[in-house]
Image (cartoon, rainbow, N blue to C red; front, side, top):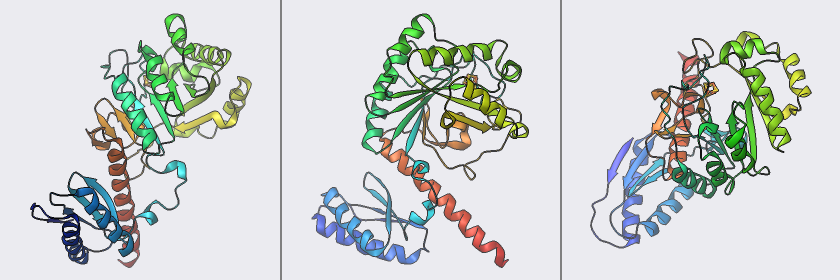
Length: 348
Ligand code: SF4
C-alpha cells in the first residue's frame, strides 16, 4: 500500500480535495490493480472534500474501501468482482452474530468456543447489545443471531433479546434445556413474531447426542423443543455431525419432521476442528466466507472461531459499519490473492 499525507494546513474543501485527488492519481499510478493507496486529508471541511474524492473515484473506476478519521484508503480498481458469486445473504454484514456470553450449563466435547460451566462469562451486556442492534439496523444488516455459551443462563436474556427484536429479526441459539421457572418466564416475554429459537440436537436417538453433550441432554433438548412450540415460537434445529456421518442424513431429517421441524429449519453441519474438538474440518479465514461476529472481546471473522486469535479482526466493535467494512476489505483481499495465485500457477 502507498501512503500519502497532505500537509494539515487550513484551506478550502475544493483546494484540499483537488490536492488529494492529484496525490491519488499519482499514487494509483504507482500500484497495480487490486492494491490500495492511503491518503490523509488535511484539516478543513472533511465531508465536502470526501464528496469530491468519492466523485473522482466513481468516475475513474477506483473504490474507497475505508475511511478512518482523516485517512482514506482507495482500491486501485473496483472490488465487486471479488464478491461476485455470493448470494446476497452471504455478503459480509448481511447478518451479524453476537456472543451474549461464553459460560454454559453443558461442556460438550466439541464446543467450538470452549464453553462450559467453568468458562468465564464474558457477557456482551444490554448497553452494548442495544448499540449493536441500532447500528446494525442503520448499516443495512438484515438479521441478528445471538449465541453463546448458553444465553438462558443470563438473568436479563429477555431484555437482551427484546433490545434486538425492536430493531431486527433475531435468531436465538440455545441448547433448549432451561425452559422452566424464571427462565421460562423470560422466554415468554420475547416477541414470538420476531424471534426464532435454534436448538441443538445431534441425533434421532439419545446415544450420539448424549455421548458428546452429556447424559440426559437429548431428552431435555427434545422437551425444550416441545415447550418452545407450545409457547408459540418457531424452532430451528441445528445438528453437528462428524464428517463420516454426513451420509446418514435422511433418517435424521425424517425424525426432525416427526417433531414438527420444517425442512428449511433443519440445519445440519459438519463438525469443525475448533475449540475443544479434537477432530473435524479445518476452517480458516482463507476457507471461510466471513460472518461478522461480535463478542465482549471484539470482532471476529466467523462464529465458529470466536474464541481463536487467528480469526480476531479488531477490538473496536463501534462504529459497527467500520467493523463490517474492515471484514469486507479483508475478504476482498483474500479472494484477490487467491485469484492471483490461481492465475499464476498454470503458468509456472
Ligand atoms: S456446544 Fe453449545 S451447548 Fe455445548 S458447551 Fe458449547 S455452547 Fe454449550
